[in-house]
Structures are given as C-alpha cells and as structure tokens.
Length: 210
Image 1 (cartoon, rainbow, N blue to C red):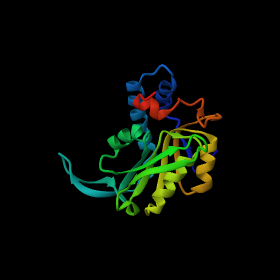
Image 2: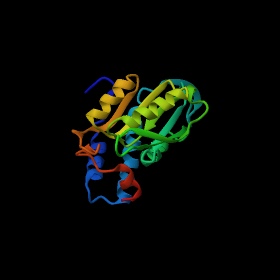
Image 3: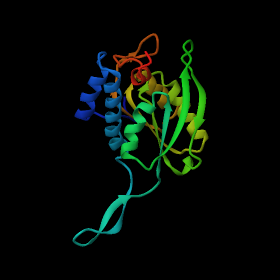
C-alpha cells in the first residue's frame, strides 16, 4: 500500500515493537515500550514542520538560528488506548494542546460508538496529530477523524503502532487527506477484528485489565 501510508522502518522502532509483540512482555514493560516508540514516531510525523530563523546569542557571538515556524500542534488521543502513546508524543512536543475522543467498538457490528469528546477550542488553527495504537477495522479511527474535522481541524495526521490493510483501506476511503504513520503494516484481521500477527488488545496490555 502507498499513498497516505508511511511505514516507519527505523531499527530502534522495529526492535522495540518486537518486544511489545511478545505475549510474555509484562504490563510495565509494554507501557514503557509504547512510550518509547511513540517518542521515535513523533520525530517522523513532524519531519515536514516548517522552520524560520531568529537571532540569538551563543556564548561566542550572535547568529541567526533555526526555530519552528507555522501552526502549533494539537495531539488528540483516541481513548482509552491512545493514552498509551500520548505521553511519548508529549515528551517531544511538550507545548502541544491535547484533546480526547472516546470511542468503543460494538462487539457485534464492530462499529465505533462515541461516548466522549473534548477538543481545544483553537483546533482549527493547529496541526492535529491523532494517536491510537491500533488501526484495525479503521472504524474508530475514521469516526475520530470525522469528529475532529467537525470541530474545525483541517491539517490532520494519524499515528499508530500497528495497522491492518483493512483499516488503512477504510481510512483512505473516508479521509484521503490524512497521512497515516505506523510502525508496521501487518497481515490481516481475524474474525474478531484483531490485527494478525498483532500484539493482542493494546488497551488491555497497556493498563493490565486482562
């Protein structure tokens, strides 16, 4: 797949992702690895940010040095699992505003059902990065992005740890303007809508709820 999909093959990301996939990895290590991968993905998703220069004083002389220009960033976590990679993003982007969209997947239809939404009032003036560990069916991600667009966001990127072809297809069909950044494009979804080979339920493994 191509187009809006960007698979980040950095060796550190791939190594840490393998550790996350292992079924014996404990909750505390799984949580730490998610944060570390998110931090590395933040470098990739912000690679195209614009720069300008400003005059500063070094210990030796004055110079014009590069600084970030353009719109500020808003991070939007798709609850609850999105919070597992939100912290890593905030380590690199500490001044970002943060929003939340709460969704759960109906076990019968696999459709996304919204139960909470809180977004910055100035989201239309910011570059928005939506974070959710898994892009499986794509229903939740697509619904979250649609809700964020309704709030006025115009420049949106989506960041996940794993994606399935079905989820990528769903996102590209409904939101062809949204770039997708992931650490891996896995094989397929099983009958229960889980990514294979995947890493299990990201929310349960992050928070130790199963």
